[in-house]
Image 1 (tube, rainbow, N blue to C red):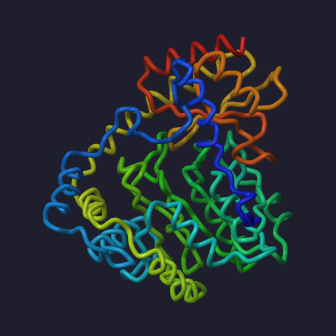
Image 2: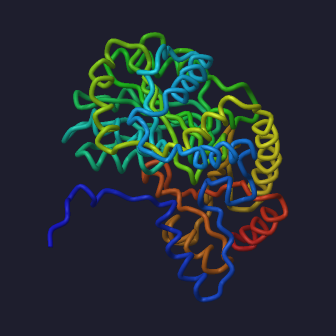
Length: 391
């Protein structure tokens, strides 16, 4: 039987590697999962008021198909949030509620990528960006980011823009590296995109998870540029399993065709879970003090993890400025590849990480990614095993 060639380029290393762990777990081996960036698997939970809003919506009968574009009150709250960050979202029609950021990304790529088109993505990159570009017949092109200085290499980007390029993607704070772009870097990227008439797709799902300096969103420097913002409630708002995100369009005349056509895709897929949207609304409108505590806890775990990694012989690691990932470099890899390194690490120690080449072979190769979401005693045990393994 036939299978579409489009699916051949689809991969998701973060979850693909877990298949090997499950086999070992069935054989009785204890596995420490440091592969998936899901705070809720490590003891964090949304506030009770958010859970209660979800339950209340169900009990109140809010169990029917929602508007395809999203709950109006939630869209209004998202407009308010993103406008406060500087994005020129002026009305509800600038926002579409999606089933997580991934669905929003799929809708945008489906709307702008045709066979042969190229999309610039930061290397290393979050795997769905490349997969969705390939799914719609395009080619993902990695551009270099300095992990230690958190700056994109503009000369590298310029050299990779061609007549086939349609968009530049940004992820800040970044997955898998924790890089947070400065206001200047964002402005340089926006100016470059405008110079070549490219869409700017910016993923800010980790926008409040920053450790060392104030976060600057793309909205502050976007002006009337064709910026498409992706965001959601999985990370900062601790609602990963509930799958709710959104697309927000900047006020730009160049986005009129997208404003007209992307909602067609939202209607085709019917709607986003309605009770969850009431929970998301409560999460945005209620007290945000839990976010401060969440980030404070993560900073302690980040500091501990990065120090331990850099103290290991044969490992070096840049300091992530945001999100909750470390992306260590394997300085002396006695194995054939980074994938073989993490596979052997799993078999020997039971520690599950993700091979860096799963985030792009050009700039991810030779690294591995781990989350620092567990509490410090769990991290200590895991890092002790990693240190012994690399020694």
